[in-house]
Image 1 (cartoon, rainbow, N blue to C red):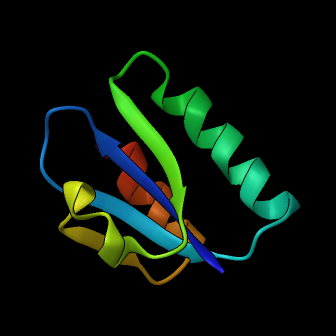
Image 2: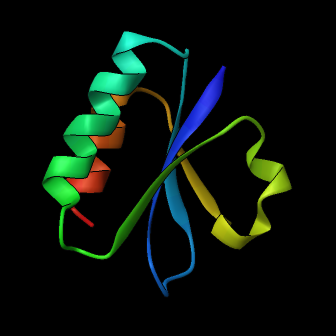
Amino acid sequence: MCYLVVNNFGERGSIAVQMQHGPRLRSLTHYIEEVRKGKGSQIITLSNPDAYKEYAPYDICSDEAEFVQKVLAM
């Protein structure tokens, strides 16, 4: 398991969703890259969000649909 995390450079906090490694994660990552292109966002995967305080606080979404909705609203 890992977390897909999106944050805006220079802003505090991130949006995250827990996912399995594999094609679904790759597909969602590519989609987020396209919709956030040129908007100063950073898209990363983390195995343990607690180890990366620079992206905290995390708004951890319950599912991919919620995650996409919040990322689109950034």
